[in-house]
Length: 163
Image 1 (tube, rainbow, N blue to C red):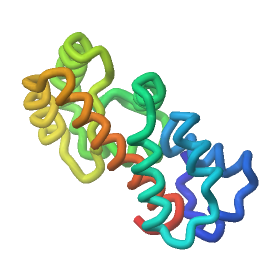
Image 2 (image 1 turned 90 degrees about the vertical axis):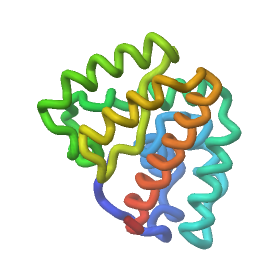
Image 3 (image 1 turned 90 degrees about the horizontal axis):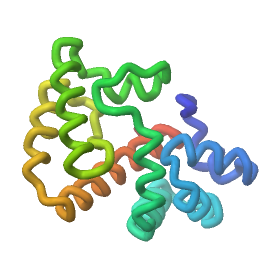
Image 4 (image 1 turned 135 degrees about the horizontal axis):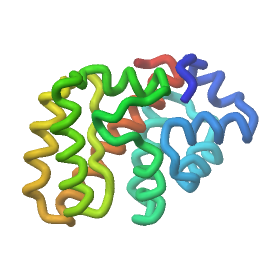
């Protein structure tokens, strides 16, 4: 994902290919990226974010699963500076517990644990994971979609210089 803010006007002016690439770096669901790319130009950042939320809400489960697959597991090390920044609060001592929690979560729900990690410590992320293990699958799926929307909004805001 690009760490360079291009501004809303810059985003609106990107070529089709460059816009799609920038959007896929925010969320790896091609349908989501296509909707946002095709509904440009956006008059405001709020309009962009509202469209992003609506596009995510309209995705089928397979498209959401594709987006999830592109996210590193919480606590895993990553070579991406942007992704590392999102998980900067994860302390080494908590990584083992998160790895165990990730395995339990994936066994129960069949998909990766996803949480908007920015600004949270590893201990907080582990507590959230532990609490979410008590959810039923339908509830957890909705919580996960809400967290994905938060991540998408954060990444889009950073892309257009609003973070």
